[in-house]
Structures are given as C-alpha cells and as structure tokens.
Image (cartoon, rainbow, N blue to C red):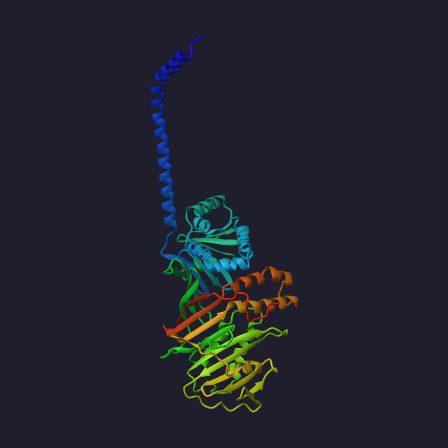
Length: 484
C-alpha cells in the first residue's frame, strides 16, 4: 500500500503532465466566449441605435385637418415620470387611490400590458399626438423596433388586414405613415390622418411639456408643464384691453369665491366667463345666469368704471334646482350716481347704502344694485348684497390686464352634490348612485386635490397671453360648497 506522500507526488506529476494540454484547449474556448459576448454587445448596441433612430423624428405626428383639439408631446414618457414625481400627483393618489389603478387596469385589458413610462417608451417611443375629430379620438405615435417586428409578423399572418393600408386589431383601426403609427376606433379618423390635407404636428419646444391646440370658443394654444406642480402658459383668442396701471381688486372678496375674474372691462368679460365655466351637471344654468345677468343689467351699468372684480361666489345646492350666486364690484375714479332703477324694481337699503333690487325668481335670483362713493355693486341675490356691501378687502396690486382664479376644491364639492342628486333622480343615462360613487365621485375627489387654478393674462399677439398654474389650498378640508 502506497503512503500518502508518494500518492501526492504521483498526483502532482500527473497534473503537470496533463495541464499543458488542458491550458492549450481552454484558450480557444475562452476566445470564443469573448467573441460571442462582443458580438452580443455589438448586436445590442446596433439594435439600440436602430430603435432610437426609428423613434426619432422632427415631427410629433399627424392629425386630421379639422380636428377640434390636438394634444402633442415630444417626450410623453418623460412628462409621465415628472407627473408621477410631483406633489400634485401624490395628493391626488392619496385622495383617490383607486383612480389610477382603474385607468391602468383598463389599459391592461385593452392591450394586455401593464403600462409604465418605460414600457410605453419601449413599445411606442416618445412622440405622441392625441386629437379629437368629428366626435372621435385618435392617437399617433412613433414606435421603435419591437412594435414594428410585432406588426411585421401580424402582416405575414394576414390577420387584421382591413384594406386601404388599414389594419384591425381588437377594436382599433391602425395605419402607418412615414414611420408613425396612427390608431383610432374610427376608420374615418385614421383615413383623415392619412390624407394629404392632414396636419403635420410640430414638436413642442420643451420635451417636458404637453402642447394643447383648442379650436373651439375661445380658441387657445397652451403649453402645460409637469414639475413640482402643474404650470401653464400660452395664448387665448380674446380681445383684451391693455391697462396702464396695475389691477388692485384681485382677492378683494371677504371669502374665497368659486371663480373670480378681475380686469378692466366687466361688460366684455361676462361672455368670456360664461364660456369658461366647465362642463358638469348644472353648469348650463351657471352660463345662462351670466348671459341673463348681462341682458338684465341696466344699460351703461359699467359706465365710468375702470376696474372690476366679478365673482361666482358659489352655487346654492340646498334645493333641487341649483342656483349660482354672482357678485360684481366695479371701481372708477369718477363714478356716476347709481343708474336709474328699472320700473318694476324695489328700493332697498343695505348697511346704510341705498340701492334697489329686481326679483327674477324670488330671493334666490334677482338683480341687486347699490353704490358707494368709489364702488358700484351688483349681485344676483339680495342676501349676497347684504353680506358684501362695505366689506370688500384691500385687493392685491397685480401687474396684469386680467386675473382668473378658480377654486377646484370648491367646484368638486358642488359637482359631487349635483351628480349624486342627478343619479338619485335617474337623470344620468345608464348610471345609478352606486355607479356615480365608483366613477364620478373619485374623479371629483382627485380634482379637489389640485387646489386652485390661477391664471394671469396680458394683452398681446392679437389676443391675450396667459401664464399661471395650480396653487395648493392651505386647508384641504375646507370647501365653500356642500358635499352631501
């Protein structure tokens, strides 16, 4: 039997005899591995560069010529990421945590993919155009390699070929144009976007912004930027008179109104305010009230004034018919005495100030008028005149021609009351109260977290130049409207 030292010596000798051959055989093997790794890296780099080139374009995309709204972004995933990291997004998700998962789930059901900014970029690229055309919505994106390969195999199978260069996938109609993919549920939308007369949408200047082109009334071009909060700037097609002195009646009301507009000419802006009232159940009554207010006020009611503050104080939802509460304060250096009251008006006195009111619908709706040496007041309810006459605060001096402030939290509270009431009385098509609680109410809770929208405007560009954004409300639990 061999001793352990002898066995060890033999093993060492054998390994020395074999190792040169083993080392010689391993060199080609290692080289092949490095070549394979280098080829994989080179292929990945080429694929990455090809993907980036396919997604790149000097255009944002295409949209039908007569689109009423075009929304575009040079880098939609970046805007998405910025929005998710903002304080506004955090507040919205805290108030309505079920809102975004519901939207994501709908997107996942439609596509089979749980969308994130990175996944969107991988499949569809950065360019994005969304447009509204003949009551139909469509999108235009600039995909890279992955979606083009998927579409190539779809074409080989012959599935989804709808003729005329159109493809049908699920409920969507698709078509390619100059490297862009156009998609809509409407074939007419896709054909209009493919036509020679369609719009070529240029890239917005800032890749972290979204550009809105609205062709309704009033027409506007706005850029929305997602940062720590949301900010907006742009142009609105409205003839605004330029001021030669700062506004001094911004924030003059003793309580924060639902909507406040401060400017120079109250007469020309009543129609604008009515047009800016957003759509919600009962909003038509608000617009009608502004229009009727302009009709019912005496002729030359704003004569001698050079500044005003118009406030939609709130909307009274205590009874079935929601009634807006409106107040207007006008200031001038040499105000004329209060205009002669209408024949059917009633003389009245508020806190020692003489005026008159003309009932429309009793106390809920009437034209009330009064004046002090430097101010002229009009309200749509007699109790509102009693609350505000002689109680206006010193306003903030603002270097603008127009200032608009809209309390989205107050709006949300009123809108929730109205949509719930409409559902209870079966006024909403195919929706009951449970549907509203699951759909509209969470959306309105999210809107409440946006705080207050504040816009300032100056005359320019054949219209008015606008800038502003969202402002947080100090006490998010306090609202000016009912929530029942």
